Image (cartoon, rainbow, N blue to C red):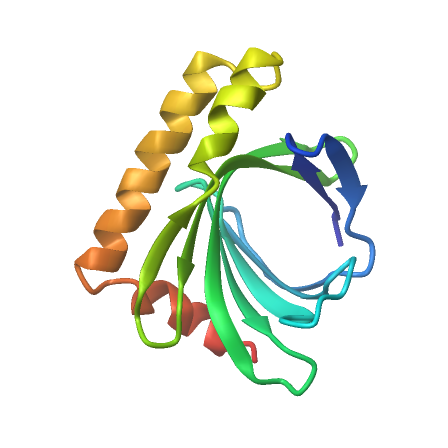
Length: 156
């Protein structure tokens, strides 16, 4: 199985996700099951679908009692090194939360400015993130988001 890393710009970190279990892997998608690195009262584990061609990571978050908390969608870049069989998923800051009642919240857009001012993200990456965010929102608002969540639920 390949190695996977999560790279964040704010805070700056690149963490080896050695405890994440890869449940499915294809050229275009990966599904993983994981426990949070720093457990929180609100959620402690989940399952994620990396949609590499679209630049999305769609995660289903659970609490300690295995109750569904919400869907959390990261806008990402994917870098793959064939020689080392390593994926690095970089969080491009913009995120979407979908509550159980269907409420959609876009979060972390305020992080673009400090990331840009500190040289952590380029204009090109901001534009890419916003385009990916727009495509994801189109999928959500058109009612097609279950096409992705069903892929996750097959592995629960």
